[in-house]
Amino acid sequence: MPLINSNAEEISAAPPNATLAPGAGLDEVLPHLGEFAVIAVEFPKFRDGRGFTTARTLREHHGYKGDLRATGHFLPDQFGFLIACGFTSFETPAEHSPAQFAAALAKPHQPGQLLRRSLTRAREGV
Image (cartoon, rainbow, N blue to C red):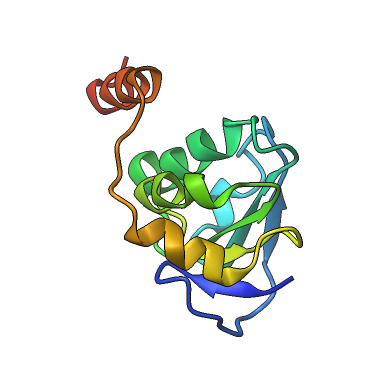
């Protein structure tokens, strides 16, 4: 599976220092955030949004500055949201080419009502 950056360009990068499953606690990785160059966050299904929350938590609440990598099943239509939540590299699913993610960047980004509400709540700390 190709690895791409937030511009949908293929890259080569180091393997992750840690891989977080959806809903996994962060207790084990928090003491090591400054040491980890790459943290991967798994998306077992494209409908499972817990990885978005994990990314925002690592970036906004814990100040993680390294490469945050999305792995597993996510869609090109979710690419903009993944970037907005702090992901910087993406192990693209086998069924979607890097070109599909590049095309998704070119589309106007209009979040749905539920997502707008969720993002507003997250920004307000609700």
